[in-house]
Image (cartoon, rainbow, N blue to C red; front, side, top):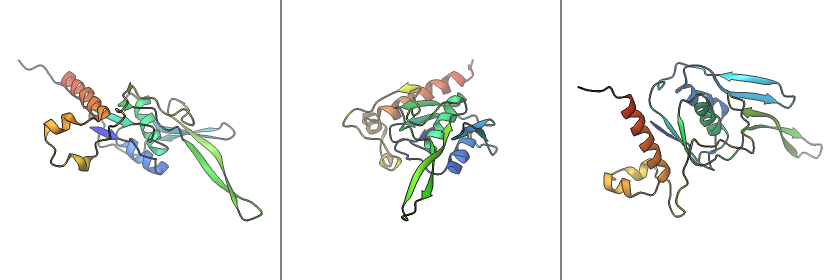
Amino acid sequence: MILDLRGNPGGLKDQAIEVTSEFLKDGEVFIDQDAHGKQTAVPVTQDGMALDLPLCVLIDGGTASAAEICAGALQDYGRAKLVGERTFGTGTVLQRFPLSDGSEVLLATSQWLTPKGRQIWHKGITPDVEVALPEAASILLPEMEDGMDTAAFQRSEDAQLHKAIEILRKEIQGRAPDVK
């Protein structure tokens, strides 16, 4: 399975927990660290449906926030190979504080760390296999694949997707029992 988080600006923290929980049997999805340094581990919440499927996660500079939480957890537990480019590097919780003139200021009140305690803010998540897209290439989206034959797919310049498929093929071949 390929989980494509490229260009995904995040979403809600609860979505990151739900998605990550589909792939991890147990453990933490992330650690919430408040401004005083107090850390609270946020656990996997359900019996996942894809605990044993071979998995690659595609990431890039547009992968942020909740998508980074998911990618970081899957990487920390060795559950998936991350392919692509370093993520954006968000991972903070912003809180509104009203001012006397009616305006508001947003301040970071906590940050999210990966299960192994890696900081996401300003650092991002580094892929296991770094693959840049060629300059003129674009990401191959599922709707673009409709009606695409094998030759056209192989000609596409989505080097990140091609690398993820290569990695998964090797993993699947490594799992296949010898037939005599």
